[in-house]
Length: 176
Ligand code: XMP
Ligand code: MG
Image 1 (cartoon, rainbow, N blue to C red):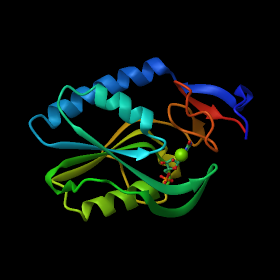
Image 2: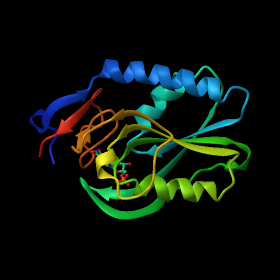
Image 3: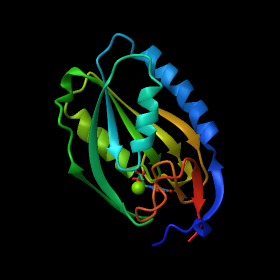
Image 4: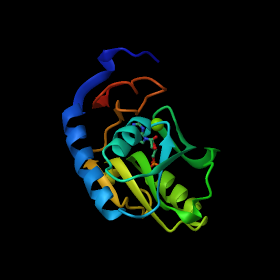
């Protein structure tokens, strides 16, 4: 796998559009969770940039924890979800927002949200940067989705193809 820009066929969502939408979402979350203990759960690795930008768009305090789950290898769904790195915190005294890069089949978020719900948080919701509703294989619906995209494989803004292209400041369609 190489990091050649020939694999970037078009920019789907610009850095500016991402910035704007994140400011709106940050304001909305700040209003909804004002005065409540808020824990932002970053699902590594794909959502590390989104989480970093989203938490800085909040005007209320929050805590941040990280988890890592494995559901994909390369660009194909395996349909399996396992915890690779778990949260350090007991989430039972927090309102939890899971921050995800992209909901595709919905398998990952359906599984992660039900695992975290079993730990009895005060509330639980899922905010995803991207939603590919055409690819859904479960009944999972994110609470907040910043952009809907068609059924294309995307990279950039934290998302990868075999660990490449995460550093791009925009979301782009990947061309094999
Ligand atoms: P599911 O199918 O479980 O997938 O909803 C969620 C996870 O799959 C990865 N994924 C992608 N990663 N470009 C990526 O870089 C994509 O187009 C893409 N589609 C799915 C992603 O890691 C997400 O957490
Ligand atoms: Mg990924």
